Length: 189
Image (cartoon, rainbow, N blue to C red):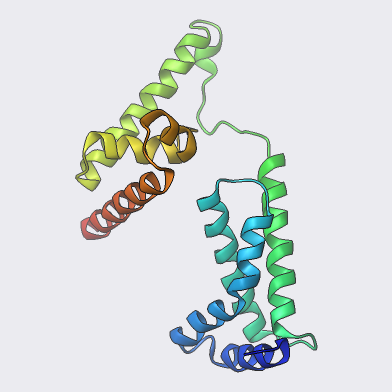
């Protein structure tokens, strides 16, 4: 495909089959992938992996919407513009959302001081590590990797700097551990 008009014709044909054909969904995403990639690189916020997951998910939602709502604009432009708008709004919303505690920590405020609250948070993280280790049948350090990077506020890059392991290797380890945990949880149902 040498020009955008050809790409838009292909994308329009794929969008006609989008809801009924999983291959059409996948190929439609491939057609818009260059624009999606530029969005991933151009949006600030989140780490690279989270940003990529959110932008691709948003692009799929926009593609699904474009498949059922025809418009007079070229489909590639609609997908890019709407994905960009939604992803930017999500990034801004995440930055501006106030932190809200979901548990009642008021009993720690006066009597125990800040050290007890920190210990309680560390204790909860340790419980979560134990739960992930047990449910996913993972090694302790693998379960700790998942919990620290997903719930403990540690980025993959920070962990890579401390462990002297390449960040992509850590992301792959985490992905495999999460897939194993997901499989074990689906078998438990």
